[in-house]
Image 1 (tube, rainbow, N blue to C red):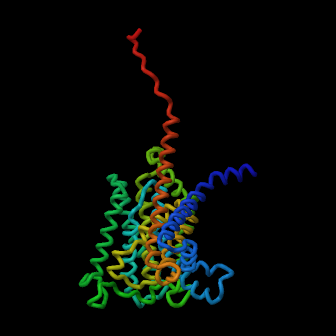
Image 2: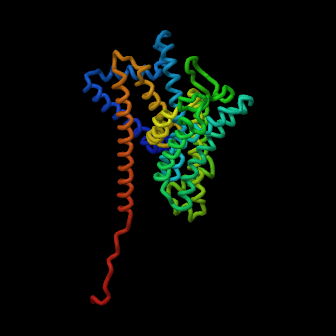
Image 3: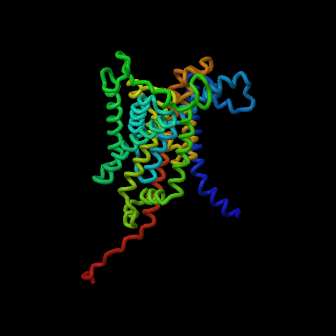
Length: 390
């Protein structure tokens, strides 16, 4: 029993230690940057941590501080929700041997569909209207991801190129729809924004008053469970993992490789579309064209998936980290007497970039190690003997 536990820990420890070590190293280097600006790294990180609202969970936080911490924690969880979903949009195709860069475009497609459905049909009951809006967003994201999957399956178009292109089509297309004099511009003639979501299509609030945490957090957590079960407990998940390991061998074994490509990118797109729906139905309630251009949720989801090593628990923790960094370094949450929020925002970007850099370095080392092992396993070449030499 002890040997089995030791073997399990030995197999699983890299999946935990590598992301933790990567994150700690990024924070150490970020602390050096803070010190170079003339501030105390310990005090700055403590202020950022309190800005995330996670100190609400600490028993020694006073009741007076908990009120402000609760507001910050609500914002952190609001940001964490779409990050979990856009990370799943990357993780599922990655298990199938593909790299989905198109989470941002699929996220935007979900926003557009949720707005179209959510801003009409005010006479519908709330359960029906909300379900239709969420389903429309998921289907729009699935369709946007499925395009790249179909191109990969039919003509071999590389998904990195096609999803990048589809990102910009979705972003510029959404801007056109809600731009001044656009076909879906809202009622204000001088404001380039969409219609307002009707109350019957809004996600219910679950915690808070000013900008409360909405029920989308439960959708994101349920999506993590669905992802885990799909990958680890279904025939479809087995086929996806087989294609990810070796598509040629999987096809030779009778696994439909083309179908796996289309399905994983479509399901990943559905996750990203739900992320867009959670934002627009949960707290934004309309979209402005400038917000479409500056949004980075889908791109940050790539980093979340990589840091979480494409596992459900890892994605949840990585999304909380990135969401906390975004909220904890904001001008609203961070104490300016400890560390200037303007510098803190740049610090968050530095830490995120370092995490991505170190993860990329790990992947390069893993690929180099595997290539070295494959070369070592190959039998030495047999020398050819010339029969006329005798």
